[in-house]
Image (cartoon, rainbow, N blue to C red):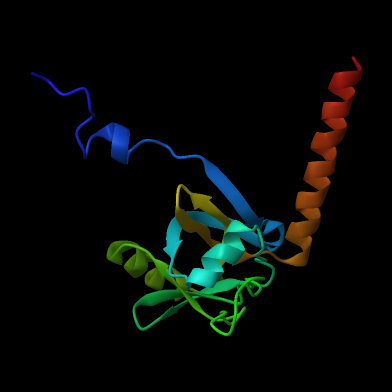
Length: 166
């Protein structure tokens, strides 16, 4: 007799898309960097950090990732102290380890050593019960590149307005 339950390890339990709950975004990263490649990484967090994130409190402004001793660390991510926390509250600006596959880390090491490439966090969110961060490999834009992007966006906006008026 066949069971009505779905066996573990099937596409339904492992590959199913879970809803995202976005906590923080870093729009400045897209302005300052040309995004070349993106990775989704898990975060190693303390209990009070998870509670503060579930309350929707975090800031990616000024945050960056760094490769140290074969591991990737997220620096300057600000997760404020949990309101109901006590003396066991976390340090708001501590370094947090990112969880990536070994081959992804090796690829990052090779890319970051090139001149002008940096690891910048783009988004922080919950996928199911797990906190995730999207880390991107970016090349710093020059001032004239930023101005060109702004001009291009303004032109696209004007074209969209003209089409709507018709």
